[in-house]
Image (cartoon, rainbow, N blue to C red; front, side, top):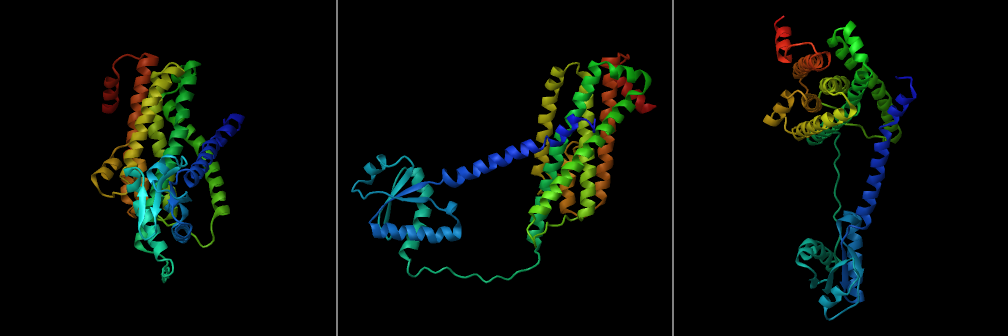
Length: 378
């Protein structure tokens, strides 16, 4: 499979959503910088309008052009209400009078939205001669506790997103692979010669190993891009547990998240006979996993709180919650407990999936709960 052309397309698959996301991001940025800024019509004398425009330019230089509405001169009129009705379609309000006593004409919600900006512009225009930007003295430090905490939180969130994205992207292959083997009756032939537990676990581990090939390729590419685009003198904040341990735990927690979701998909695939049934059963599981991920994301900045503890204990959210904890807390022993806890659930889900498979496909008698009880009691 790794040497096939299909696997090459599989490796290139994540590039398509990245390219589409960059394209839509650039389009959204262009829209936000051009079309979404409110336009204010300035119906003042040429001298006063020029003062407002100079004040706008000085403030925009410091605050950025997106922080202020755009200004556009409109003809003077004794009736701004009538003028606003006949103005250009993109003019939201009209400011008349003078910078010392500006008068805004527009809808109530637009006036409330722009009143502060127009007041700031008018104040800067009035104080044009005496307005001086105060120079700020800079005292630089190598690091600070607040910046370090914020950086670790960002690393935790990014690690959660990456682990979740890779899990959802790669775990679905198990389901389609199992259904294909069931359709071709290959799985029944294997089950006659090898224990079903071994088939399920072997399939899970083989697909996990194949996923690591993709991760190695994507990770190496991302690292090369990072080195090419890295700004000199800028370094990433270090996780609380250190980069070597953090990367090792990231790999382990991806493996745990993958095997947890993959074992669940194996159990689902054991019940499905067609691709249509797979799609019907797959959608609720994927949506549920997304809700669990959002729950773990919500708890990432609340270390030690009940939601964070619940996210750590819940098996399917535990890998995401624990990788975020590794970025923010330097204690190691909770990770050992969490990994053992997740491995226990992987084994339990695989066991239930095997019993369901035997019941619905191999037709070995007895309820699955009875078989589970007998296997647990020896």
